[in-house]
Amino acid sequence: MATKKIILLLGIILSINLQLSAQSYDWKDESLVPKSGKSQHSEFLKNQYPFPAKPRNQWEVGVSVGNVAVSGDVATRFPNIGWGVHVRKAFGYIFSARLAYSGGVARGMNWLPSFNYGRNTAWANNYVAPVNQQWGWAPQPGMVPGQIYQVQSTNTAIPFTGTNADPVYYNYKTNIHQLALQGIVTLNNVRFHKAKTGFLLYAIGGVGAMVYETNINALDERGGTYAGLFRAINNEYASNNYNDRRKVLRDLRAGMDNTYETPAEGEKSRRPNLLSRTMKPTVMAGIGVTFKINKKLSIGIEEVHNWTNEDLLDGQRWQETPFGDAAMTRDFDTWHYTNINLNYNIGNKSVQPLYWLNPLDFTYNELNAPKHMKMPKPVLDDADGDGVTDQFDLEPNTPAGCPVDTHGVSRDTDGDGVPDCKDKELITPTQCQPVDADGVGKCPDPECCKNMVNVDDLLKKCNVTDLPSINFAGRSVDLSSENKTLVGSVATTLRGNPNCKVIICGSASKSKSGQALGQKRVDAIVKYLVETQGISADRVVAQYDCSEGEPSVVELRAEQK
Image: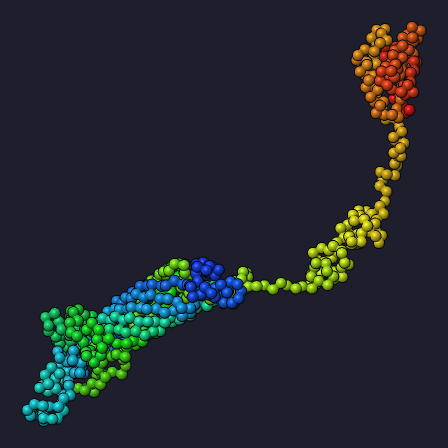
């Protein structure tokens, strides 16, 4: 279940960081360039140097917590607590350096008993183990002075027999503190097909110095040994079956306290000490992965393996053979720090740590959308000089001076087959085509023009049709003001139509008095037109007997002059 939760957490973190922006820093920003790179940056901006200056990048500070484990002669317990802090600085896009402190408390216990611990003084001083030693006491039956015999580790004056041997279960508690300078190589920030990544894989290598102190739990809270407990457990699980290991450890933990009161076998004065703890140089290597949460924050998982050239981290370095004169174990102890770390970037006027940036970012962006490189002016052939290059020109031999379209073809606005530069009739209607060599077409006469009337003839005709009638009241022969207005309008019409004349028609009355009255009324109108309105007399025709009718009405009509 715990494994599934860890996988789910990593999946969520990965899904978040894959959505992060891939924007890079502004390479034009001079404030991001350290003083040592100002000259290079200036030359780069002027295209005098091909490489941009390395920007100032942020420091990373981090804290970690995890599991510390010793890999040695005694089986480690899990989990153990470990912690650490670090500060990291990138010196390039691949390499960065880290100053790291790490510490922890490692514990371990064997589930198998041991008997040949006579050379391990931390155990041998409290429990009976065989020790091969020259007999230096008075002769006893079977014991000759000067000869080598097995004696008890707790009292070398007593011979050792198998029946008085004490089994012990090796255990330890080791406090570790280490300061290291580490080099880190980022493995996946150079991306050829993506702007940048949301997680980093990296390898760790370094050197350091550690101090440690190891104690064992050999005595109970009253200062007595666990000899009875150890014998009882050894007797119960005498078969040393691997499947019983959990039961053995359970019974041991139930019967022992947690004091770790006895200093384990150590180097003592044979090695440098610091704060009463053994100090050893270390070499380390590791691997890690970090997930980016945002531009400032990241979370990572690491495994760092430390080599110490020391075999007493777990307080035990002796084999089970030869019995009574144990040989040292073959391998030195190492210790691991498996941790989760939380990291934060600090620094103003700086880009993110360079290991989060893709060094190819500037190059690919410049290839895609050049903003810095000097682009040569393209030289494209145009044999006919029409402004359209030959590779796009569909008419490679356009006559000089002829305007062309986007395909290099001479313009022909009216589509008559004669280019505009030679067309004497630029817009020839379709119905007037085909055209001659000069682009001039011959248009057919429209239907409306076949029966055309001469304009001059139209201008000579009189087109006035309607003129008013003049009514006289009673036997009056004088024009009333209303009649003068009507006759004045007739004069205006005549002035606008010089090809017209006016006929003034009186009625042909049967009586002589009626005829005389009609003539006087016609004459009054003629006189008003000629004398008052200034109409030429030859354009005013008086007719006294146009038709029989009422003599009080005089008709006016226009005719061709």
